[in-house]
Length: 471
Image (cartoon, rainbow, N blue to C red; front, side, top):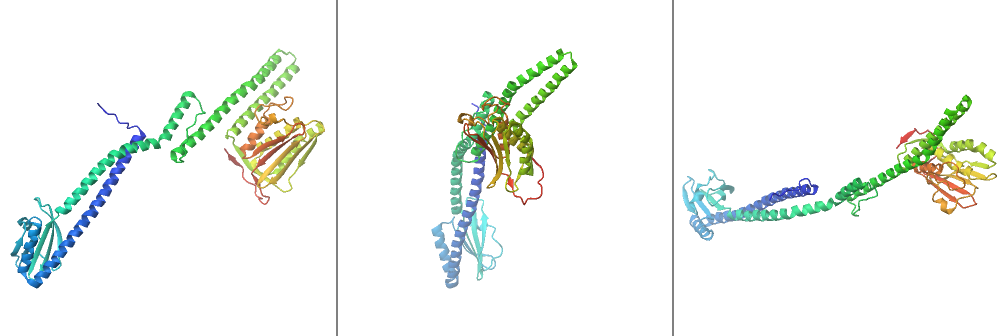
């Protein structure tokens, strides 16, 4: 039976990587332990040999060669012929005394010896293996002593076997454990894949990836993915709402345009035909204006609106509002008042869009304030914010309508006038600037709309700021 490994799985590849890194780390640890232990064992052996050299030197100087021969014979009897070798040579290199396995004589002993002991490591071809040898000169004689490193090699071999078995067992454990840990770490990514496939199959952007709460990288990725889904869900719902709005409003406009065009074709009088064509152009302009308003509204609400920010005095905006509505206030018999700020305040915003938002609020106040009423526009600083207040003495808004007046196409305050887009566009423009818009109202006591923008600039800033376009 052929076993197919999941080589395309990221968890499998991570487990292989973990296992490979473990093998490399184990090899490095083994090499370090081997070198340290081998060096330590050799140091201990050299320390024993130095003690033997010191004892041999002492006996030689005090009691001579006979006592030294007796000491060597006793050492040989204790250690065994294969575990100890000692030889004495005269000044001509002739052997005076020798104990131990004769194989040691075949070692590549150095030709010269000094009074201080010199240590060497030799390799024998037979079962004795490696040998530690020491050579020194004592009076007229040359001393040679050697012991095999079998004990050291035996300990190192045991360490090697321990590392080998521990490495094999740890590798057998680490690979499946690494695979399980990798799959657990990638669980969020698998959830993202599952949710993404569900969205593709069902076209349901309301689905979200559950967060683990650990705050690690996969959890932050899932949080970012959910945020992206929220944006996409908002964009698609906005797109569908735009289509619904366009289908709802444009159908009537296009039907009206078609009716006017048919009437123009039926007219024989050039003046009547020209009058109908002028009406068609007027309705076409209304159609284009509505389309632009809806597009601006959708871009603002989805965060895609490009703002051309510039620095300008708040007073200039209020003066423009006054110029637009002053004559209208006189014709409708309204008390229209503009209260300018006590200090020179500056605003860093998209002038045209902010002015449009403010004009929409004031226009809304004019629509629902009867003759003899009062409308007041006031601007002032509150902390680091700019607050603009539009107050009217109109019929007010019922509590049921307060939560809906900023909804698109909502026309709940009295007779239907306009298309219900003015307040929606005002809120979208203000929020696109990072501000807030709110309303306070009671039936029969008028309404107060507030615009709060955290973008006031001090008067001492005298250099005009460059126009900045931001997405």
